[in-house]
Image (cartoon, rainbow, N blue to C red; front, side):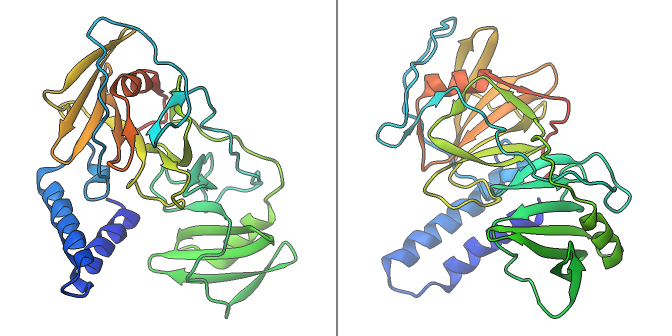
Length: 317
């Protein structure tokens, strides 16, 4: 479990315990907290989203085993997520580095809460460069350095050192590395960035996409799609999440759908629903939040059309 997931979980618990007594909201929040704690004990298919993801109850339209009728293309109707053609990887990282970052090279180009980023640490977020729409909320302004003839700020935050500077009205660049590396190395790296876009790295290929949702996280272990009314974040709640599953984690029961040469199992677990597509090793897993309504047949077609690439890896929990 990474730091973001742990922070979200703590937030759920703190809000439930600190809510005022005697109001309906308190009862609802505490009930949700108890439900999330039960999920921690029972576990969901992917350990990376335990305690964060709540899954959808699907609107069921059965596709019998052996049938290969494709879903009709359509947009969102009455809050239902529909699937069609689209580009998951349209966003690019706007710069090309001239130097390695802390002796690391060949980064993944990722998306973090809607922000393009370079990840030099195989998706572990130890050494990253992120183009943000606004500065980090914790940024101090008492240690300034010059970057590209602009004023930047560097500081330590836990086990990391950060360098942040503003490149435009809605563009801040954040470099984050282990604290052992000093600010001059970060400034050198920053000075070597040139305005030449790098295309997004593709952990999965998609035949269909959720056309009524917005992609907001792309990394080796997960791709997430959120409703447009939700703000971007690094979590999984309220979204559709695509990831790799491991052998031995397949859900039992559910319905088996035949889509082309693929067999897709869609199963309702305690507190959730999962689409599971077996591969030679592991599986493609699609998880859908309870706030979304998805047609079961169309979910099967969406899941069957997802293929992992060489960089995809199962999340570690």
